Every structure is written in structure tokens, then in C-alpha cells.
Image (cartoon, rainbow, N blue to C red; front, side):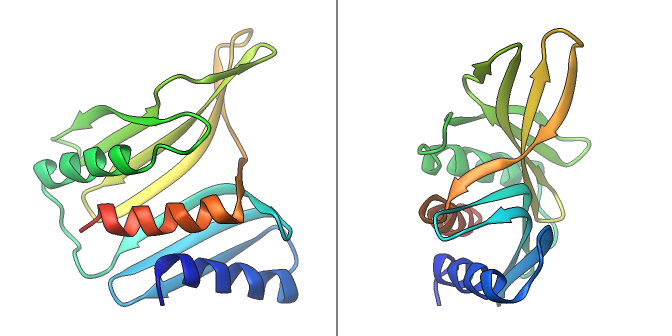
Length: 160
């Protein structure tokens, strides 16, 4: 099964069996996806966050994380805003990607934030920055099922 097929199967099972909000996991040898769902229907999903863990590679060097981030940004060009590598923390073992141009709505700017950790963990969230209060807060990622499935394939492919 491809990563997209695993995600689709997990979402289909969730649609029938679980009460939202909930956490859905899809895994295969080498990786595990964890979706923190707020809403789900036949068209799309609202996620608090998406996590991806490599299970066959548990220690990533700074160079490997940076390369992973570059490959991911190069592949994932279809979200509301494209991703770019923003910061590399070699000492802390982390790479941060963020939307290249946040989407403004009212007094807020929303963007995707992806963090890659040297443990092989990827965490994706959507953040809204409030201009009035100067505060960041997590906001749901609204993704169609097709985009979520494509994203799963691209995350797995970029981690190789």
C-alpha cells in the first residue's frame, strides 16, 4: 500500500468508527503518520496537526535534516502557500519550514509551519498570527482528502 492509500484507509475507517475530535494513525514499515482530526467528511479534513515519524531511521544529522527540508519544500508546492526552509538549528537538531507568503485575513496572517527533528519526527501545523495582539495561535489545517493523500506520499518520498 502507498502512503496515500494508508491515509485514505485510515480516514475511511475514521469516518465510520470514531467520534471527532480524535487521533488517527496510519503506519507501514519505516514510518507512522498521526493525524489529530477536528473534522472529517467525504471531501476533506480539519487537522490540529499532522505528525510523521520515520521508524527505520532514528538519528538524523543536521545535514540530513536540511536536505530533507529542501526536498520537502521542493515537492510540496500545492498547499495554500508554498513552503520554504526558514531556519536550521544545527545545535538543537531541528529544521523549520514555513509558508513563503502567509495568507492575510482580517487582522491575522496564517501560515503552515513544519518542524523536522533529528529523531525523525516531522510536525506540521497551521499558525495564525494576530496583528493586534502580536500573538501566535494554532489554527486548523483545512485539507481536501486528495491533498492530504498527496502530502503523505510527498512526505514519505522526501524522507528518503
